[in-house]
Image 1: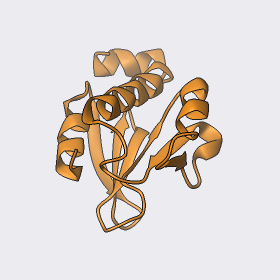
Image 2: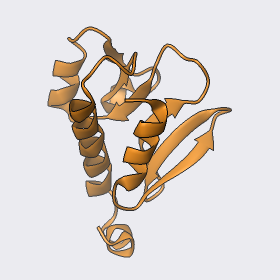
Image 3: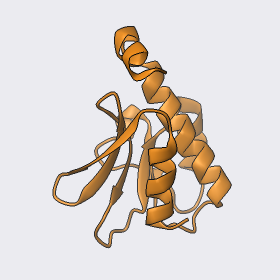
Length: 115
């Protein structure tokens, strides 16, 4: 999956938005809360995203996946390369990140976003 394919996939998720932050990081959000981040510049990390505590424990045991810098305490993982995971698996994990973050939004925000 290329960075542009990742971007298109993230933006296809319900109520997802993108924003460039911290210099040149492309941040994907729902209701103002991050669910995935990818650096637009060459970087040792292709994408980082939120996951469940169980998925976090399993994923960081795999080669090419590590706790995300600054966000590991919140169960974020960093994928080192666009070839680390098959596209379908990466899409499922990013979709799950979106759902985890959406579920924690206040009910009023979820209603407003139609999710």
